[in-house]
Image (cartoon, rainbow, N blue to C red; front, side, top):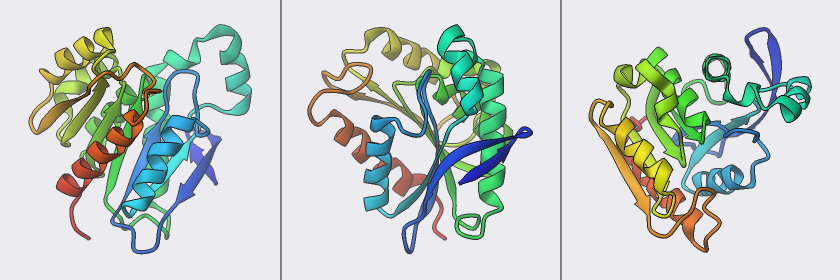
Length: 211
């Protein structure tokens, strides 16, 4: 798909299973995009559970080339959040998915963008999930997030786990920090991403409204 966002066209992969229970909009981590093998594995697990997904690159190809040298745009949280919000608005206008309840899934700095989206579109975002996220980078938006938020962190990712626990204290309930024992930042350990899928599906089943 080509997603209109903030005056540019972003590349995206939209999947809507038959009888989908809801949609999940992915915000990728620093230096990553819709081809991230980790997010695609999680998305596949969500498809199996009956959820649709939109994986969208928040930078254009030209911007990705610039960022590869400067590493500046990947940490431009305001830019990423604005484009993710535009992507959510675009998705709401599609015939295939616009009628379905929507959640946001953020990885690394994408978690901050997902939380800002939830704060800015409380009527659109029914739940937020973060994997190895940097929710602290959402700043003051943390206190405005009303959507139920699940922060999934590897137990061996000590620095990020502490950042998530600190950020969680600023979130209004309901929220939870889910620790995957022994997992490091990218969840390469056997079975670690499968645990992310299970926790994510449980959260969506709990908090996404019935159609």
